[in-house]
Length: 273
Image 1 (cartoon, rainbow, N blue to C red):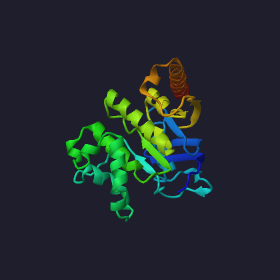
Image 2: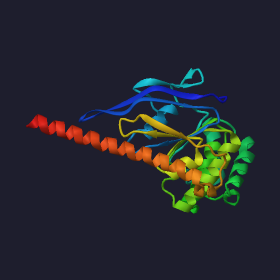
Image 3: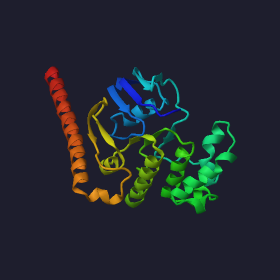
Image 4: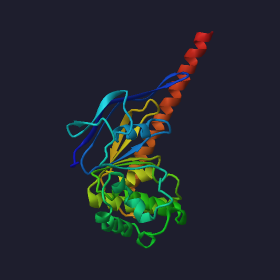
């Protein structure tokens, strides 16, 4: 799969429930250019993860379309890398063999790719743990192995759904730096879902902000700072201005949601009277 733009247009997703249809996404439009790192911010339940799984071809939309270049996405993008909050490592395989699982699942020989796996483990400081098992590792170490597994086959696209959300602050910052360096070096296009405002701005070329459910993209902020970035960039006034803008956008969205609920409650009460 060569580098091509990934695009969603008019994306909607609905789920049936006992209380009627739940509209998770409503009219989402988004394009990710080749080599671009895009972070997605939004309140809990706004459809961020749902949008990501649809873009990766792991779920089908109710309406709209997803295209990679000029090709419709109608099933899993097998050449893409996907990483979730849980590392999903196999406990009976060593770190190196967990990284190489990408090739085994595709029916390919692993031997030609061991050097690549070891190179990635070296990049994230895990070379001396290559023969260890996941049960012997900390949470941050396990996520480093998961990053290597997602990147070992040199994917042009990487989908990441809150991969560092369960980690402590310092470990998370370190992995942010490592991911930024690896993605920039490889020229990989990344869609990164997170609740962290600082994390989103630190990693991305562009941060998109979603509304409360039904999820829509209500704004974006371009982060005009060179990538990859040192952790110290978070202290710069320009970075603080970016995160301030994002925080205000999220706050405005929550206020609009609360006002809409109050209006709806008022209407219901008036109808009951």
